[in-house]
Image (cartoon, rainbow, N blue to C red; front, side, top):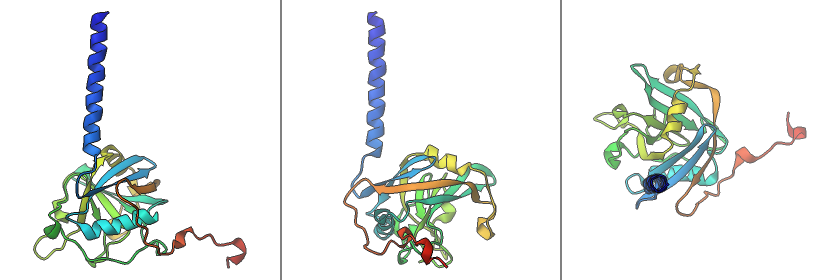
Length: 223
């Protein structure tokens, strides 16, 4: 009986140590703000780098604090043909003009020093380097082609996943199709909802801009 009790105590001690290690990994560190994204596939915990990418982080937190990501989707899963378990997933407001905030200058990886590694969060954008706004992507595996280099500004990486990479990988594996040009065959076919995004550190700072997407049009006003 004593051996059984000692064995149970050892198991409990290991479980406690594991929980402590997990808590330490997800604790806020100086210069970071944690954001918890809840998806229909599970939660993803991010650590945003306010020290090295202040403008990009501020933009993202404005969307979070205003609730502009709530009710949107993870809509794209881009898998590398040579390695289908790597690539990136993309989410956000797409082209919803009711949710969009003003654009901001691109903070390149050459400026921030934040590289596109496994689990990096970065801003999606169009051809204009300063067109990033309400859409973002998370990498699975390193993506050095997205870093800045001579003659190419790259994308604005600004943090990383600290918990929930299993969720990210599950979304990446979703069946895809449709899309055009760079998005061809990469649109997720069955909706993956971005239920909510909330900061866990600091005080929320809503922009005060109108939340047009929340305004419901009365049936008698429709034409």
